Image 1: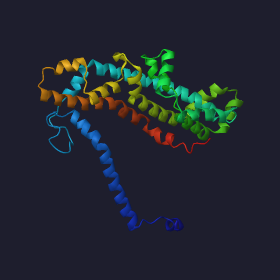
Image 2 (image 1 turned 90 degrees about the vertical axis):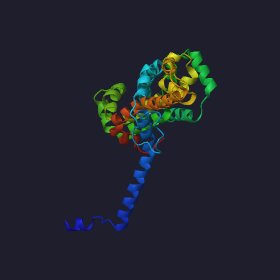
Image 3 (image 1 turned 135 degrees about the vertical axis):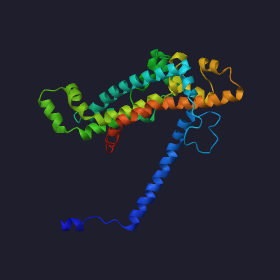
Image 4 (image 1 turned 135 degrees about the horizontal axis):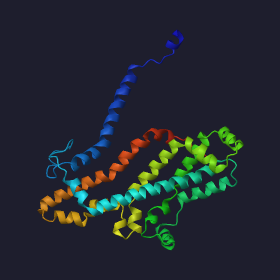
Length: 303
């Protein structure tokens, strides 16, 4: 015991000073990152005429729900929210299925042509046909202006597949795989009953990556969708924030307002829509947070 006590690390005064400075810097950086979110939340609940009364808005000024009540009246926003949920949920499920079916074979040592297939997938990370050829391909497939144009073209993320493949290689013991084969399991049974139950962390991380990407995607909708009833929420949000456009129902509600009041109400609407569009991601992250660190630290990517 005495020997163990002698081997204990003794903290010096410099170590303590470093910890204090480090804590102060981390606190400052955290506040810098969090304040824009805090400001938007407070502004969405504030009286629009009082948002800029103080340099730093640390709490709502003149509590006001009007931005959120106007959102509930705007059919475009509600339809966009529903479309975004459908695109994200269905797209993420397809992403996970395709990524798993691509990553698992590449993780097996006995796969013939493994190097060729890995190279084939990797090349697509650096070279693509471009926007016009991609549009023509989607047009030939007949999926332009349909739900599938938002889902199928991005069904596989090669980098995510490589991460999942590496996780399978490093975290699924070969002894377990061999014993499953000895017991008569085929590859699909091995994947479903052995590999996937042991891969919850990487599946949760992939769901996070794909889900956030799907939810935030507006560019594909802007290029491939013409029917407004199919627009996702992010495209509606883009119109509101950049172009200042609101749905017909919101415009009718705001028509009777004075010009100055109209501008302030639109400002509150913008903040409220930002919060509504960010809420699903903020709620989803805590669900997968406990798996995130383990899943993302999968080690070096090997060839």
